[in-house]
Image (cartoon, rainbow, N blue to C red; front, side, top):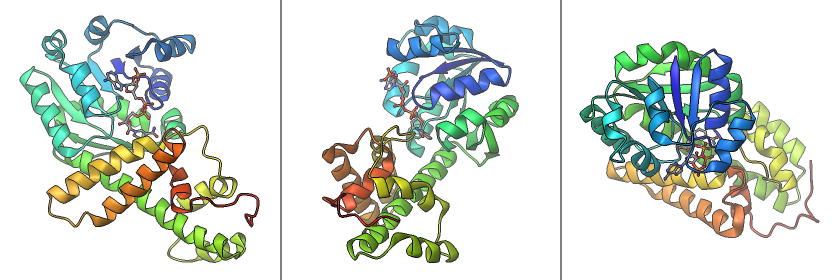
Length: 295
Ligand code: NAP
C-alpha cells in the first residue's frame, strides 16, 4: 500500500519503520526539517514538500499532535483539492467533535475518513502491538485493515466517527487517574517511612493492582522521568480534551479538573517534556530524595 505519513514525531517515526517492515511503500513528511533529516538518516523515504508528499499516497496517515495541526496541514488551500479519492487515516488523540469536524471537511473534499487512535507508545508502535480503536468509514476500514493489523495486536472497528476518539480519551483518563491515584498512595507510604516493597507485595495480590504501577515504580523511586515515550504535556492536552467533552455531556468534571490542575502544576515545575508519570512530583512536591526510603 502507498502511504504518506504526515508527522514524524515520537509516534510517527516508529510507525513509519513498522509500516516499511510490513512491506508498505512509505513516504514521510514533517513540518520541521530536523525530524525529516533524522528519518532520512534512518532509511525512510521523505519529501520535504507537502504537496508532492500528499500526491504520492493513496492513504494519508496522520500522526500529528492535535486537531489544530491537522487543520493546518490538511485544510490549507493547495491541499484540499488533493484529498479527493484519498483515505485519511487519523491516528492522533483528538476530541470526538474535532474528529467529526475533520471527517465532514474530508468528505466535502471527496476523501474518505477513518479515525484510528492508538493505545500504546513507542515500543508498541515499533513492534506492531498497539491497540487500535478505529471508527468511521467501513470502506476505508476494510481497505486499511491489513495495514492496521501490522501496527496493532488488537484492531477493532468501534463505531461512528468520534466514538474511537471518545474511547481513546476514556483510556487516557485512566492513564492519568491510575497514575495519580498510585502516586498519592505511594507518596503517603514513603512520607510515613513505610517500606515500599512490602506495600507493593500486598498491592500486587489485591484487586486494586494495575500493571502500570510496577511499570512506573522505578521512575518514582529514582525521581527520574527522562527519555519519555509519552510526555506530560501530551497528557495535559488529552485530559483537557476529556474534561471539556465530559462537562459538555453533563458529567461532573471536578475530578478531571483536579487531575488537570495537578498535571499543569507538574508542567509549571518544569516536567512538561518529561514522562507523564512525573505527575508524582506535583502530588508529592519537595520530596527529599536524600532521605527517601527506597524499596
Ligand atoms: P510529537 O512527538 O510531539 O509529534 C507531533 C508531530 O506533530 C510532529 O511531527 C510535529 O511536527 C507535528 N506538528 C505539530 N504541530 C504542527 C503543525 N501546526 N503543523 C504541522 N505539523 C505539526 O507527538 P507524538 O507523541 O508523536 O504524538 C502524536 C499524536 O499521537 C498525538 O495526538 C498524541 O497525543 C498521540 N499519541 C501519542 C502517544 C505517545 O506515546 N507519544 C501514544 C498514543 C497517542 P514538528 O516536528 O514540526 O514539530
